[in-house]
Image 1 (cartoon, rainbow, N blue to C red):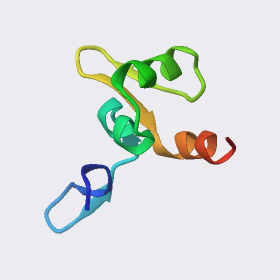
Image 2 (image 1 turned 180 degrees about the vertical axis):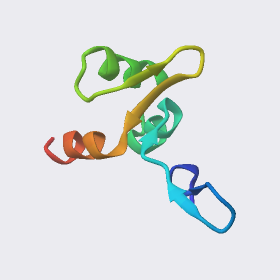
Image 3 (image 1 turned 90 degrees about the horizontal axis):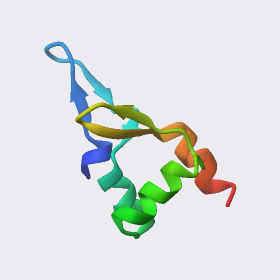
Image 4 (image 1 turned 30 degrees about the horizontal axis):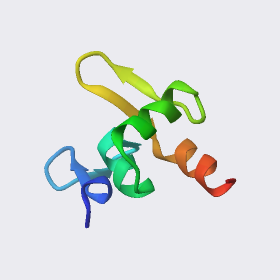
Length: 70
């Protein structure tokens, strides 16, 4: 199971699947470099959430919708 598929721990005994990808995860999924992922984010081809010093998070649902319509 890769990092994007690992459930998040919430309360004891409960898990929750992560709803967003990181830039690094998209690099792996798409097989491209960091600059290519940032170019897609800046072109707004799919929504991305900027979390100040942490970086971008890309919602899985909207990313997959974009990817499968290509």
